[in-house]
Image (tube, rainbow, N blue to C red; front, top):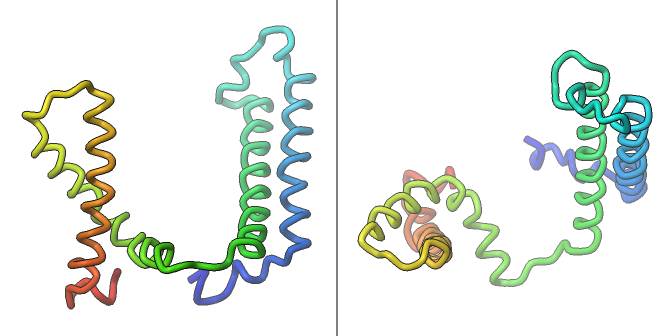
Length: 154
């Protein structure tokens, strides 16, 4: 819906800068306010960790302001500066949703196939990560997005 209605294109460059500044500066101001007035300097950290405390509410507001403000800035900044795709980026972009949907069963299948392989845990993790990325993108581009039932969805 966002794409079809052009909601992200309605963010102007000046809106992006404004919200980026609000997210960054506003987030820092709320953070400092909470620390200075909320008891953190005296070691009273429990109110910040949740529950019905104004410090916890302030932290939630700070996180949301910073997250949304910086996200709007990044959307406009990337749209202005990096709005081009080459052949490789087009392939990854076109297959991203199919990879998102199907990566879990493919990862599980590859993991089950590697049960008998016993290198160091980090090596196995890296091998499985690389293998699952390659296999998932390959299957997406060569098979999944060409299947008549899935073509319109993916």
